[in-house]
Length: 102
Image (cartoon, rainbow, N blue to C red):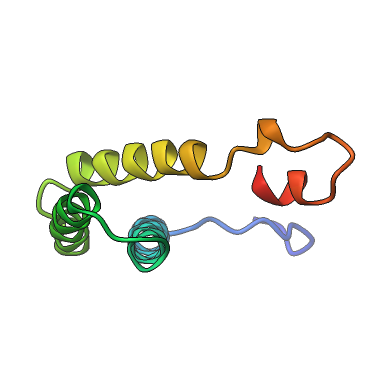
């Protein structure tokens, strides 16, 4: 390499550590999203069962056991909940809370 070249090659260990940190950050953020879902709103029998299964899925994601399936369950649950609760389509397009609900 020349002295004027500012491009550096990354070692495989650095790439693996970087990928691991992104996976860990994604897992932690997904768990916090679901915990926020648990703490918000009114409780019912269905919500209690969903929260129990979701909490088990959070533990499985954190540990790494069947993390892809557990994370997929959490993402689908949170997506359906987001569409059901934040009905942004019913708010007028000029209303400022419409962007917040999206």
